[in-house]
Length: 305
Ligand code: AMP
Image 1: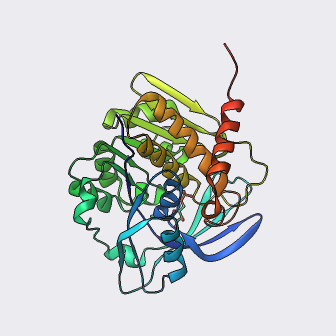
Image 2: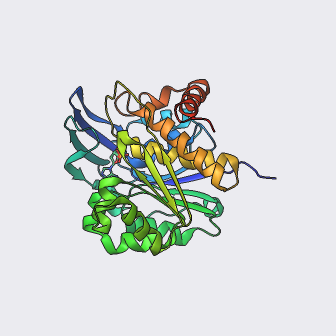
């Protein structure tokens, strides 16, 4: 019998200033751990480990609590919360980073609360790979560790990042980052290269073009939802990963079919987050909306015998 499992999320918590062709926001709630824990919270209980500064608003903490997210592992340090400033042109697949202020993230040394060390489903969201490694070392018996990263760390800490990738089960990355990391334009070859380092699966997100999943001996291609109104793509990758691991943990059992469904649940959650800025859309979702969109995906890819 399989049992629903909790998810541990470790990642950045930030205040984002974002400009897209459709609007602009300043210092709104963001960060890889925020997007992914909110998405995962629709499937299972989430424990979040991260750091904020003294300027982090209580209303953000309340929002996370309303989603049942356990904040025992949330640390407040003296100083300012992490900030990221990004811009998108009409190609919404590519974020242009204008500014990254690590602030309290640079002095962060994640210490897992004792009971978190036994959690089996773990998402290492985009964060300094040295911190991701430190979390990995504290886990006692993880069963499924998923990790994500971005160009900032591919350029700044490539060696540590590869150490992380060697030790996790599933790598989730976007197409441009995969090409950069592997120095290989072909995604199939790049996917194989990452697999050769150790992980069992690699999922490459291609923004509005869906995602590809590689494993030794199997391949899965998922479409993206044909949304007409994409407002702000920030957080799509993290939300995908949160929905993915949240669903897997809710099954409590890893098999190829559950993993494929998890990819579609991840895509479903990502299709919502881009409909509005920050977490406005994902914080206001209900189970029925998620189910309905998942069904639409099933119909979209169904083509008979
Ligand atoms: P994505 O899902 O790839 O769109 O991730 C967007 C989120 O990543 C934003 O909310 C940012 O706060 C966060 N972010 C940006 N740069 C970094 C970084 N260097 N380390 C960790 N998180 C980051």
